[in-house]
Image (cartoon, rainbow over all chains, first blue to last red; front, side):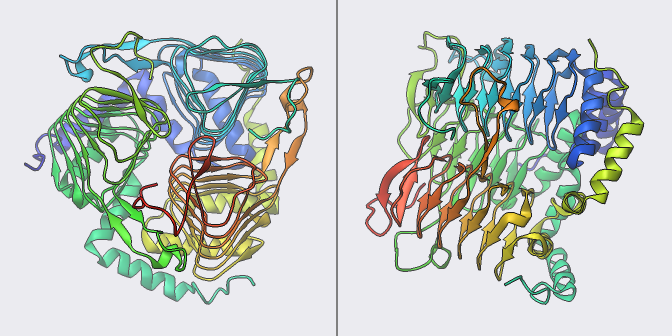
Length: 197
Length: 197
Length: 197
């Protein structure tokens, strides 16, 4: 039962390429994939310049490090002095807002759309997609590999430790979060230990 | 103790390149790396067309999103309507089977080969590799960053939450799994909470 | 409040590109990004040859698999027979040492520099960066997606399970670590279960 070559015939592929490029929303990803891996400050600034044109809002002094992916860039609002880290992936379909001075480590993912699967009678792919906006406050640091689930709101000053999976919950400002699922392990400004999240 | 340039001399490198390209199993990865980052529907269909030729079995309506890696493609069986997500990595050396309507989020890894390390007397790299097939049922959703260990079998309808590390264990159909290590946190069709895994 | 095009004007971008390329430390990343995705043994050897020139120390028989990133390569010491895995990311700013026969799975990250955030009165981006060296012993296996925090020391023979987040703590030789945060779940040479981390 090999996939027949006719299913994705060359003709169908080329027509699809034409549609992608004719679509204003998709076309930019073709250009972005050409610059996505350019290293160093030049790459960071070139991507920032490009992204700022397509984000819903982009503050000053934005850095977009190499390998970063976006979906629905046009629903992403970014404050001043934000660093979007190496290999980050922001799916902004449900709306994502990053405050000022947000720092993101490598491999961070922020998601704002989810499959619904409440029914076990119907296939997940035939159930709806749920959109839930994500709000990240000012002066938040998301360390390496953090995953932010749809609907999460992080108040100002929160620090999220490496590999934490942050679900929808009430978090206090300046909370230190860690673990999968993430829970509060301290408060910034009150902690005893050094700074190794 | 710098590595001497002679260890990987240009001559040795070029000979190696020749061997890689002469090897039917390796050659395809050179082509695949050229198309691996092409965005949008065109990229998804082009990769699907390419992969379908090399998978052991490929169903209809396959999507292979950007950045995905494969090892031992020839041991991967994929059902109908499968979405292999952004930056997924499937190591199919021990055999991997994905059912129909499987959805995979970004950064999912499925592994079917493991280093053995039972002996502490011998180096891990000198011990064997263990192959254990992975079986993923129909209508399964693996959310972002999920890791599936060698030997795992997931029955139909299972949903695995973001960042979960799924080890070999008996799981019931339609289970909701989350955490590292993954444990059952509910059952699809019976859950109270929304859908945020 | 769109970012003004003047902030990252073409002139400023080109000047930045010139600075990057004029800087001996940065220039190499431009070349590295061209070879970073080359597949198979040829790619692994080509990257190893390249990296060995810039690492502080590189042993024999090094493999650097595709998609791997480095920062501060010049502070990375690597022993003999080391495999740096697919899509690994080593930030060696604070110094990173890998012993002999270290094996790294896909998606491993090793970090040696951290933001300090003890004060909640000042922005994290205005607080210092803390450098803490990482030491990985001989015959250590870091499985898929492992994160090694700044300052971690792993003795000889340690095995770290997939997705584990390893913080600074005292670990014994040949320990089996797993989870987020990582804790000891057994000892190599004494374990009962097979080898599925």
